[in-house]
Image (cartoon, rainbow, N blue to C red; front, side):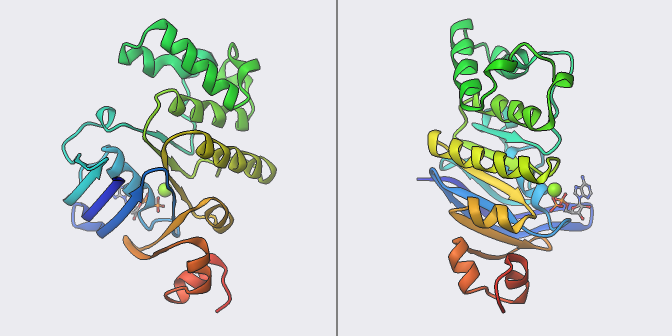
Amino acid sequence: MTALTLQNVNKSFGTVEVLKDINIDVDEGEFVVFVGPSGCGKSTLLRVIAGLEDVTSGEVRIGGELMNLTPPSKRGIAMVFQSYALYPHLNVRKNMSLALKQEGQSRQVIDERVKRASKMLNLEPYLDRYPSELSGGQRQRVAIGRAIVREPKLFLFDEPLSNLDAALRMNTRLEIANLHRQLDASMIYVTHDQTEAMTLADKIVVLRDGRVEQVGSPMELYNNPANQFVAGFLGAPS
Ligand code: ADP
Ligand code: MG
């Protein structure tokens, strides 16, 4: 079964068409990267998948189920944004457990999941700290931890590393690749960074001006770019 299917998805804001006839499949366990220049519709596409925006037409299926009218909290997905959006007045432990509490999970389940996620992300020493007492990289790991504890089948990452410096970016990128290996979940990762796309992806979806330009493995796109745009974007010889 596919984790996600987008079928003929269109999205307009007023008269402006931002997503145009998007067709994408994400398999279970697959790591899919959406790449494309700024303004091409990447964030809007993630928001449509998450249910933060309605589609204008087309179908969003998650785990085979039509989700067009399903609210975000019921879609079995978790989203990590580039701005960490942590609660400043809550410590790391509480930032990570809040959503579970709201779901009505037991104390025991919450403690277990927070413990496991903080171990995976090397956050155990920081559970009692507040966001203002953490580095940028640590904050981003907390944001990822908040997603992990919900045990989603599908993770959505919107340029999660773009606020980090180069060394931290590389580190966190490796961490995300590791997480994908450990978790039984599919991941969609948005970036405008070619290196991130080439190193993380099982499959890359190249977006341009609201359309899917090409889909393929990193090697397929590198060796057989459909056109100059894809070649230029992925740094392939042309
Ligand atoms: P990306 O994430 O690839 O940089 P976005 O999805 O943020 O691109 O934006 C794609 C286009 O949609 C842009 O032209 C942007 O101005 C427009 N857009 C995004 N959200 C809205 C909105 N709520 N209302 C009107 N236009 C929007
Ligand atoms: Mg964006």
